[in-house]
Length: 615
Image (tube, rainbow, N blue to C red; front, side, top):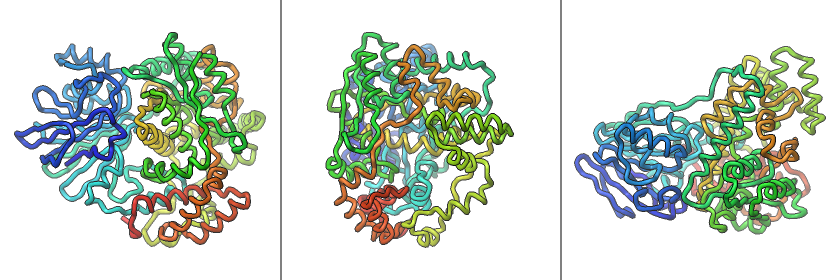
């Protein structure tokens, strides 16, 4: 067994270490050089807490029973350290790694419910001869593994596993289909690579070293019950949990900044930083579209928020030419296909922070999935009113949504119908809307199931069901994009909205607290932030974020597109001829849905040297 570090230097440029273990023998050092053992750990460190050698990994308990390799941050480590010290544990350094190791030695898997933060780790129990892989409740930090006979490999990124040389480079047809057809990725334990799996969020997997048999557990699930608290109390609870989270996320021994788009979520984080640290140096980092790019800009609001808190601003405005130069690198960084070129804007923001000497960046990822911030969440709220047989309230809500600049009534009803109609009826429409470049015959020959995941029962609570489902479908890929882009720049990205405390509060609230009867999204959060965030931002009803114009950028990178269309001829999942016709329509002014998905798969297939066969 081995955890690879050679391909992961960008994730930890500050330090490196290895540990090999066999019964009765332990060795450790810096860079591994042909080390052999029953278990081999290798680690790259991005130093955030306790920058001294006392924070070096892999880390072991004094008695030699437990050995840990760990990625992430546990923000509540000070409080947890005090509790563990009271139970007799001693500490030599100031890192959270040492606290995680002591917590595991004290409580085993039960320790996971006590860790407030983001993490992925492997811990070896030399006495029981087990290896446990564990991941944080939301999957903020990645953890992949592969089994080849009696060998188990694990790493923070897929390319490191592929470097072992024994893992066939084959696509997993179901994963590729789910992405091309429905835009789904990271929603299952399997990946788009055959034989490569990920530890699911909020899970741990224990491997017996004798035969690699497993047992599993879960550390957190979204709340099922609806809170009975009043609206005012809910606002107070949300504000308190959010400010506490931001305060914890600022714990660092290196410089901390914030990504700022100008939307409610990132603005709230920036304003909360100023509230909890009134005198702190504050830097914000923003993507601003170039004039004439055909992309909406939030520069007005980002500028207002930065001035409101007295922040030093850093801006980046990439060109299509820069995109063409960087795009293959972005695909290699992500290692699996992705659905929008807005990832490039995000990647450039992280590079901007690195160039400014900021190592930790707070970001608003995850807020929409907890607060109902997307247009389809508005449709889910309408579906709830219809399912509850409240037609008058549904009509008032639909009119309010349209008046506020939301979708028209027809679009809202379509969205609601997707949640309310039987799956059999919806399947007929989905099949007729399949992209023309999808090689359906090949997928059928691979035994792919064309049906999407069924929507979970909602009992009249469609919005709450949609938010619960987002924890499995929507959030994981967004967190993967965030992690790979930030770590490619050796930046630690922190997401204060994604704490168990805040999620338990928000996901347990009545639907009308999240999207009210006036179709105001994130209602409880907007009201909780009054007096903290400028009213002009809280009053916004549009949603932009780090949006990029995929069509404009691809037209500016047309030579890259044409090369990719040629490469698509060797990708059995795609109909390259049909894809060429679609590109001609793009050049003529159209923007067909899902076109970038096909280009993403074609280039990914080529860059990772995938075989034409499948896994």
